[in-house]
Length: 367
Image (cartoon, rainbow, N blue to C red):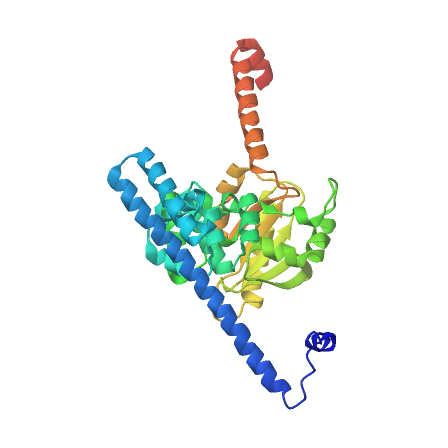
């Protein structure tokens, strides 16, 4: 008996050269089918949870009583959990209810469920801003984020850092609709401000070449932070104009935008001269580096800080230039909110103090 048991636990024999190709093909078929079945189950469960939430919501809305909703969900959970297991707890039924409430269009849910699982939706449905929910759902679909990546992007306030979040709600909604219906990415969805460079491991004092070297050392992480679709092209791209040589810090290509993206690193505050330099780079790239069928190149200036009015007056977007400040450490949301409230409090206190000053003191200060 022992001998038989030992024989059963032996590793499978290596396939003969004749069997090896057949084994590889059959293996591939099994793995592909298994993956397909898992995907089908995932889509089926997501749609089931939406249907359950939709059905419960209809019943609750009919009654128009909040306490009725709590009672009915609790009673329903007790019955379902007993029959179908722990996936139908009161909390999860309320998740389904919220799911159907914030994603009311079944067609959109069906399209998203090809890439997003229930764990994705559970993170997204409790975001307050509808545009924020749509943004993260579409970026998950386009960039194929897993739930860990989604959690990290939400935690680092990716939506708040995109140019899209600063647009009027109607325009932002149109861009997200284009992304959903046509897979059409716009620069405002790609460029983020500020970019989070905490993974570079920089100290408080650093030189511009250190930032660049750190970016190149961690090039994969940097591209992930920029977003899917970026391909690294060159470092210190040489541009010969007349008798002078210029060097662009970093050059990328974005496959979905079909554009070259020039990146210039600045340690100080953004200056007006930086615009002129970037325009020179972009015009050179347009003339000497762009392929037929590609859109005009875009530029991004990564700097330590910027003045909003300064940027607005220069009308950078007309030149295809984006200015982003870089952080070497991401503040958690609560810390950031606390700092903002503290800044507002200090500003008000300072203004109140100035109001109490005598006119003479004010004149001296103005001098």
